[in-house]
Image 1: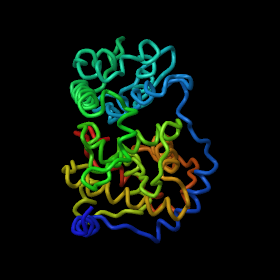
Image 2: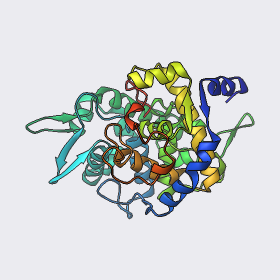
Image 3: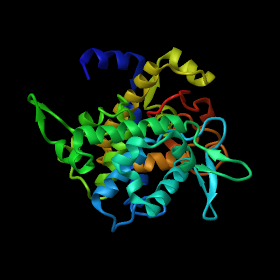
Length: 329
């Protein structure tokens, strides 16, 4: 990122190192007391004994379509007599498909997958039909990724990973650099890329040598938490948009999420927490505790960050920035 971009970014969204420091000990304690997911639960992911290339394919294609699952209607349904919601339902349906036919996630299959196939796969028929809101977009992302893997990496995710340490005209081709070739992974804030890397590192399928370059995969949950904690503060016009729930532009969304990513980078350093471990906790915290509507502090229930949260009196004033028309996160 150029110096000019950085300067512009922090003119519009400021970081508070004071509040980052005050949050750090509470967050470190909460994270360290939380069990870590190894992403091997067959309810959502390939089992431990699955072939490495099959597991890599599953994660690269599932993360490619792992962005907001609903708009006007919740994406939730019963599968095998259990209620799943949002990303849980997405990965449950992914796991079921993998169990039925791992070859479904081959680049060759994905390169030709139809809109209708994706719609049927990610839908539940019943009294109230449930489907992701943009099956055509997700199908396009899958086709682009499948074709790209075939064209550039011999149809192998293992090849993609192995190429990430090579050089082209003296320029290092890190994994984040290579992933930008695919539309699904073109987000400048790299949410999906870092989520993919988190999954495969935890599964022991990749060894990250430049750990200092890890970032949290910034989505709406992590952005909302950062806003409420005050570790990032947008300038007045952006803050008014958030409070009025007015739509952000694409550039405003990028500016805010880049600032949020920077704030969490500082937080990970002062807490000595791996950014991916930090993300595990923050994502769960945003879905279960610091929710968009009615966070648990409103109902008087406990929150491990309540003592240092400047929004504890009126948390719903800062719901989150409104930006839904995206396949980035």
